[in-house]
Amino acid sequence: MEKIDRREFLKIAGAAGAALVAGGCTAGGSEDSAGRGALKPGGGDMTYRINPKTSEKVSLLGYGCMRWPLLENPVQGQSVIDQEEVNRLVDYAIEHGITYFDTAPLYIQGWSEPATGKALSRHPRESYTIATKLSNFNDFSAQAAKKMYHNSFKRLQVDYIDYYLLHAVGGGSGMELLRQRFFDNGILDFLVEERSAGRIRNLGFSYHGDVKVFDYLISLHDQVKWDFVQIQMNYVDWHNAVNDADAEYLYGELSSRGIPVVIMEPLLGGRLAKVNEHITQQFKMKRPKDSVASWAFRFAGSYPGVLTVLSGMTYMEHLVDNLSTYSPLEPLSQQELEFLLEAGDQIAAFPVVPCTGCQYCMPCPYGVNIPAVFAHYNKCITEGAILDTAASEYKKARMEYLIGYDRAVPKLRQADHCIGCGRCLKHCPQQIKIPRMMREIDEFTESLKQQI
Image (cartoon, rainbow, N blue to C red):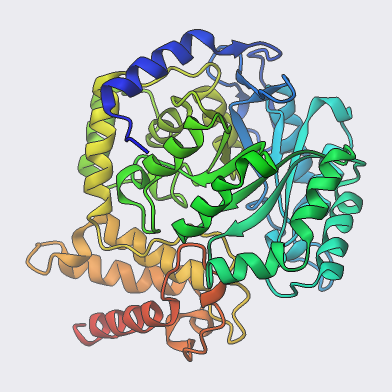
């Protein structure tokens, strides 16, 4: 596959911008129950893309349901999700033009699907499309896979699923695991039959890791006829992906075959919502009124082969900001694209852990809050001062790291409680060597304590 250069990108993106379909959404706001006043998107209509198979309009902004707001004190054995707040977010999203909602059986300890189903079932079925996945990571039998598949219908309160995915292919043992999960047990053939029967409207897969798996599945396109594929794509991963293939390659392979692309991790697990200060200043000089996150969303949305861009919007302010970016989308200029790719190279150079906070590694049997440990470490690394022992602010930064660590992660859930069992390794889509990183973060933390 020949790479798409930057001038070709602008040529394609410019044509796509002229062809974007708008409609179905007004700029009116609604009252925020927290008393923050009227919440409005940016002043226009939602940008839509057309599904080439069904001809339906799909909102360029999709709702990722992996990060729903949680209850402060959940009742044991009951949902940990704040259903009332989920309902409010879903209502606002649909009111302002979002049509695509993405969940999975394992998200949020298994509670995402039922919470999403409850919220969406209050709206006409034709007003939204739902995506969910076959997350058969542990039991590869056909019986278990079919049970998970049928349970999704019950939890989501639907009689058909708009977008169904083979979940997180390419992880673990790569091709061997792919065969066990979907081929040896006949499940891929079963899902193709379910699509023919109309219970699945669009069939695809989400990719993480081994590029051999991606290439093999794409080679089956003439046989399976993939309706869409979900990939991790952002301006850092375009040239600096931690997995086997950069996003530029993945997008190019899909685009050349006319397979619509669904984007996950446009913010790289939140890292692109708050970047290093000197990069933030450059963003603000170019577009003072725009958020840092909006740059990442404009990057993902500027590619014409993208059907929708998923965002896990836990809070109303996130939803409103992202609506502003896509209502309507202003595609990147050539100058902005080149600036972003250069910024992506700089961000990739920071020695952070490539954790996106997906929670697939959780729960840890020994109580370690793996994503929270990585999030705090990455925050301090990104802010820069913690690594520069010559900086005048180093002592202050060291104390802030230690105090912030105890506030962000309870002591019994910190890195020093990792025993290196490795149970988390097979679940990490970013292929992070989690036990090794936990040991290194613990050693780093202890070294800071010794300097006090």
